[in-house]
Length: 226
Image 1 (cartoon, one colour):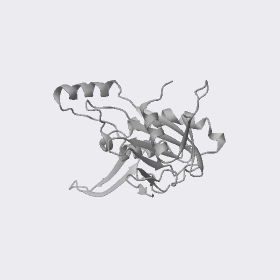
Image 2 (cartoon, rainbow, N blue to C red):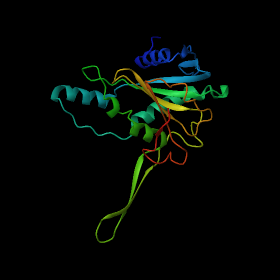
Image 3 (cartoon, rainbow, N blue to C red):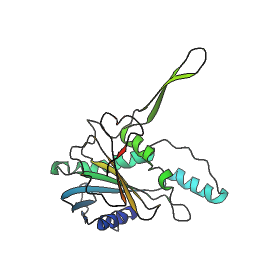
Image 4 (cartoon, rainbow, N blue to C red):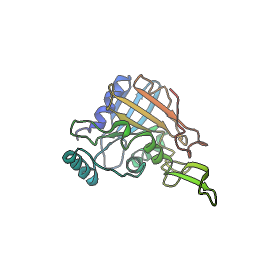
């Protein structure tokens, strides 16, 4: 089976970082796409392309015809679906006690061959909502005036990760070719059984973000740590 665009980009990134990415042959049972070794670490990677669904194809056609389009999207919805699809492959090798990452790539292309990059469905806010739950804003309204006197932003339901769910996933990574050079951003799972060391993806084209368990349910709490 020929490799996907996202797999080709992932291998290119690994090669640039002196990481050996070994393609795992497909079998009747679920397995991750790659076993990666280097920098004193061995880990698995499941790589996914984000491809346009029917509604996104319709919007692309409308944009092509009208040069503008109005879009409404649910924060984190597309990334959540990709994480949910990828989890089974990493869960299948859980007993090996190795770090495992889910690698996502936005392959929804405009006519010029580019995607929406940092503004697309794999942006940090979308990844946060997919990992830790929908963004909920609690407001306290003053009686009589209607003024907002208190606000609390939090991540609500539909999270992918918590103490009980998907602790075998060490990080969610996003590959981006919107800019040159090719970059990878890793959002580390604070609940991970086997965390991926920061030193693995530590090149100039790599970004690592962490959040504490205490702050995981608070939007925009990522801290860059490379």
